Image (cartoon, rainbow over all chains, first blue to last red; front, side, top):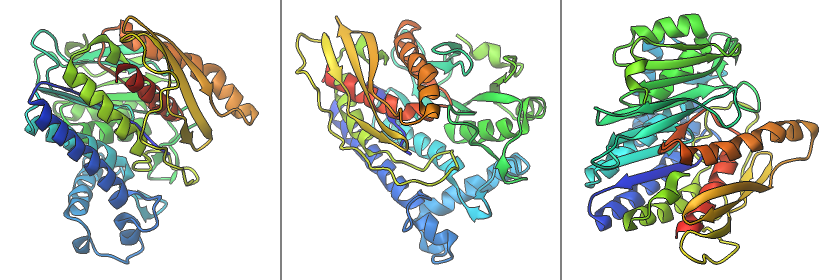
Length: 245
Length: 147
């Protein structure tokens, strides 16, 4: 399984930005090497087999596990760092890596960054003086259609992440049963400043289903969301309208 | 997908680097929790099947990207810096399920790519999965076109 990361970087000194880009890409490779559950010798695989302690891993491992534990608490266990009883922080690593890479580019002097990691997007700054970043939300039920367009107007940090059933069937697990989540949803899109959290909350809310998911998302500060059910109903948090453009 | 709309130098640099990115990424094993499968990572270099002709015009073929179900490869047509068509030249079709998926997924991805450009958006958020290979090949085709 591969995913594609698309960087869109504006402004800044081209040499500095290109150096930062190379560094960000190298960082993503490192994240893969350290965190992949598909690699037998990754630190995460070895940690799961008790061959390493967290203290013996790269410091990023402790950081990610701490964020994951926070996501588990906030979602009352609907987001989980484990799969089939085994340590598996996959659900948080991608968002965390995307956010970190985007911030690296901003620190290097870019004035606008849009980083899309497999459909999860972190926006920082603006693409230009005249317009905000705009992100289409793919409509899971209409080939080629967009369910909404999210605008980052008025904010310098925004993330848009979507979880849902894929063409190959459900791939989100209900941590309580260990099986595919029984849900009436086909997609949940979360809009919040950080893609680390946007991705976690979308995954957790998807597993919860539309009713509980929407109620829970409404309770989170600075989080808006769009939920699409298998019956083609669209449900939104109260403040989402202000983010649509 | 919107990439062809703008042409300033920095953007080209970034797109060129994005080819490296799309080559790397077997990343993170991602959300799906099915049978783990080893996937070959494709070479990072984009290999345009046709040499870029007049700026932003021509047909460009993306890298063949290995996915769990087989290789995916797309070809794009660009006129005057605008993406006018996307076709899949290789995609998994070994079994009826593949064919069923392709019958709606490929047209969908094509329209999505073209629409991203017309809706004045910078990128698309979605729970894509099998489409990753498509996107990856598309990105390398775009890189060839703008590089």
